[in-house]
Image (cartoon, rainbow, N blue to C red):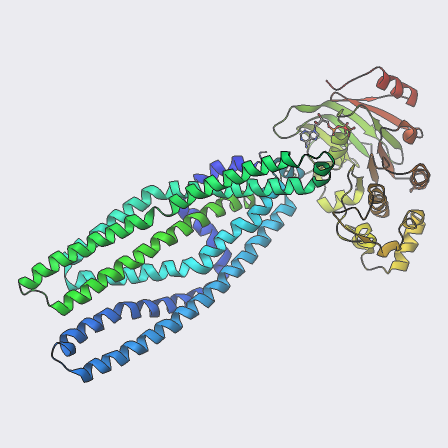
Length: 586
Ligand SMILES: Nc1ncnc2c1ncn2[C@@H]1O[C@H](COP(=O)(O)OP(=O)(O)OP(=O)(O)O)[C@@H](O)[C@H]1O
């Protein structure tokens, strides 16, 4: 399955704007009350804008020209009251829509983050963290800007335009039609250019993602950068990404600003039409000066919102480009679905690989037709040259990926038929690079261990003692309360491995996989770990991946993993022979 978001985005571009908008509006479907209130406020505001000119025109003809200043005063009072109503309505609309926009942003970010939590390892292999962060932070903000600031202005301007259009047509249908005609040109122009504008914005958002990925990569690798004094390398890469962003921003800016001058020109043309046609009608006695003043005002009421729509339309296109990038993530599903046990004959072993082939997404086959069994309570070692496929084999046991062909059985059933909770309870995996999150040793040990969450520190220590893990905890100054940072060096790599070890063993899994889990641990602590492994419950199966062969001398079976094959080595000596024979990665 393709999880590369940058490849997916090309397909997404073809989706219709209306369809995309509908899906997006689902996120504010529960905001109906606020949306209606905001809409009401818009109507009040639009009415003020529409009836104002009519009153002014009426006042000129009825009161100003005949010199009735009392009437002028009354009309002024009415106008003032209307403008105050408009002001209050406009304020209400801003407050309501600001809230709707922020809540939408909140829901959207939660939805993306939750989706990210559900996606498989293959997704994270194919996408850069920086780009994903940019989608969660930056792209959602583009949508928020449109919903909180632009949507109601959009509707409000549209309402004023429609109202002004009706007034223009009803006062004088021919003059009205001639006035509105340039707007039809604007509509055609917008329809043709919108996809191009959206594309330019999409490219720009992608480049923001690219820049964020560069920043993230250099921050993650700052030690190597400083140690090798290669600041210039990342500086150059960042400079390129920044330049790309600069260029795409300029292009998006040009695209976004293309509507305004065209709309302004068309508004000017409409004014000229009204002036020329209006003066002609006055000369014929079919129109009054007051009516022409009102009329010109309505032309403004029609074309000013249109000009604002030009700017808002660009915001809308940017939001849509952001939404495409977000919906790319939301539309993804994990390929690691739970299936029925199927017709395949089960297995008598705790774990069995039956004719398993595996290739990473988009890559060559790494494992070719692998078959082996692992029995309950035994210790297995996977040895072999670097890049031979040991971690890949272990990742399949932990179902981080599914085989491209063949079946893996866990406790007699297709591994794919287990619900994630049940499967992860059965398998403990200590990764080559253990991940710890910010908190304490306790938080990290109890991660994913529901049963012990509510135990006191004393009770946890008792449990650690029972599992012979107390000796490992003693290595930490403040025991369970020792602070841990996910980044930074306050915890050494060896210490991190010990915490990951305690975390996995305490969950009492059926299979415990150790991927180079003792590579950074001193010999004395390593002996401690080996004693702990010895004392695991009898039924626990251990799978040990190790380059240091002394760590696997007690294994019941040694598998030699190389060039996509997993071969039973028989004995440690034979495994050493195979390694010495120089079997290299093909
Ligand atoms: N996420 C991935 N995407 C694509 N290819 C990968 C990925 N992870 C590993 N590989 C490739 O799969 C092959 C086997 O790698 P693997 O990590 O399983 O080897 P290993 O035997 O565990 O090596 P080591 O002893 O160095 O840990 C290598 O050619 C590697 O480049």
